[in-house]
Amino acid sequence: MKQFIKRNLLLFFRDKANVFFSMLAVIITILLYIIFLADLMAGAIEGEMTGVSAQDIRLVISGLILSGTVAVATVSSSLNAAARIVIDREDVAKDFFVSPLSRGKLMFGYVISAIIIGLVMSGTALVTTVIYLSLSGGALLAIKEIALLLLTLFLGVLSANSMLFLLTCVVKSRNAFSSLGSLIGTLIGFLAGVYIPIGQLPSGIAWVIRLFPTSHTASMFRQVLASPTLYQLGAPDTVVTEINHFFGVTFRFGAFTTNFAFSAVLLIGTSILFYTVGLFLMKKQVYR
Amino acid sequence: MLIEVKNLVKSYGSVQAVKGINFTVEAGSLFSFLGTNGAGKSTTINVLTTLLQQTSGTATVGGYNVSTNPDEVRNLIGIVFQDSIMDKMLTVEENLQVRGSFYGLTGTKLKQAVAHVIEATKSGDFAKRRYGTLSGGQRRRADIARALIHTPKILFLDEPTTGLDPKTRQDVWELIRNLQKEKGMTVFLTTHYMEEAAESDTIVIIHKGEIRACGTPEQLKERHCTDLLKITTANGERRVYNLAKTTDAFAIIDQQQEEIAHVEIISGTLDDVFLNLTEGFENETVH
Image (tube, rainbow over all chains, first blue to last red; front, side):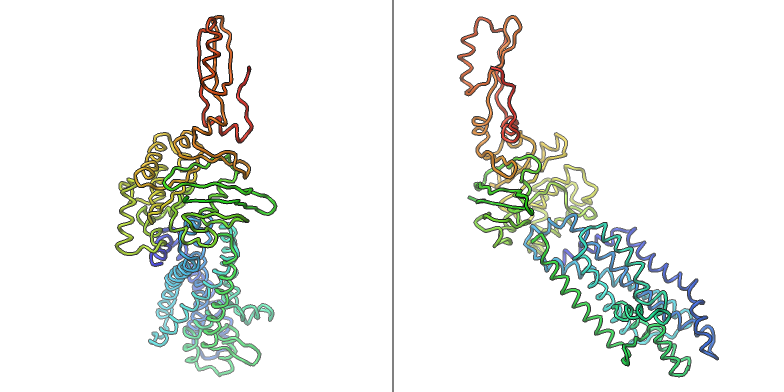
């Protein structure tokens, strides 16, 4: 198992171009935001926050949006890592299946290595974000906040991995998976309420976002990276609540408002669900 | 018997790829499985190597049923696939370590096993190079090393020399023969090259999912092809005779002794056997 995980990691990280472009994709989303989106978004709430400096508003917005891009990174980086299962299935998998290593162990090895890759890649995005926020005047993070960020990163990657694992059990060909990958890469930013805030979208789509696991990864990041700054601005509670709902810091299900713990449990629950369904589908496949 | 196949049937939908075949492979022998593309060779090998579940019938390897005890079978068999399927971005050594770990080898045992198969296949020169950068012959050696990593009793080789140049083919073939003779390994081979099959202990020819013939190369030649006698007379006429037995030639030569300028006996080859059995091909028969 150790050898197999090592293999998957070597195969990923030795493909330098692939690693480079995966990193670049993450960094570019962050840069795009900083260069173009930040001012636009800040303008949207400036009117409601009187007596607050533009720099503070921008800091809050940066925390909100960059949290979303890190959440997106958990999925896009896991996408590359999960592709290994599909590539192997077309290529070398039969060489694995003629050995007595059980299919379950093999899948476990794939999942663990994909999670490690996801953690490294989206971890880079998280570190970049945290550094950027500190440099633009944000408070330094306390130990507790760092712990919460790491927990969120882990759950986010786990959740992304479970969804993609399920996909790899359904999608058989490499080409199909790669096309699907581009599709997911494009959609994920919208599905997680990152590119357009949930508050600006029609209620049907807002529901999809609320139920989509990655939105909760984003929400958890926002609660750590943006909420403290938001409270410090001293805006009335009603305005804070409204901003929370508008930008997806928290989600409303009727009268219930989500919090960090709820989102964490939702990520764990859906991950278990997706892994279980995936394993079930996998058992029915041709190779024994 | 190391391998026993009884009434093996494999259907894909309504198409029967293998139609109830029977054969056995003796321990320590070199066994050749011949057939045209689509004859059912790969299907049979995939069933024997636990990659495919048969529709009906039984197959046992080393006494273990391939459908009920696949893991025991997997420990007994090593396979060299037709296409090279190790990781191109990893070195030969790394590849062998990963594959060895699948058989429960760890730590020093794994290292020893890797070193041992590298030596046995003379792969030392390129063991530290990435698999993707190797030549065809080097890859094949590495593939064979991989198949041997857990010291299997039976080695399956699916067209191991296809696509290799003649010299490399000879080297690879020599390696396979040494493994069989020196280590007493059972070799299950499919090949397109009849001269390779000619050296095997038993040949089975499969066609359209059915077994057409089974025996030693000599038996097959005797039963399924004829020798040709070619006579050129003094006045340049050419006569060709199909011989039921090679010794029949004497009588014909005796009879025509006066006219003969040149005599040639062409013995039947495995190619003829193969073509006769798979295509109903007729020799250029005259008399």
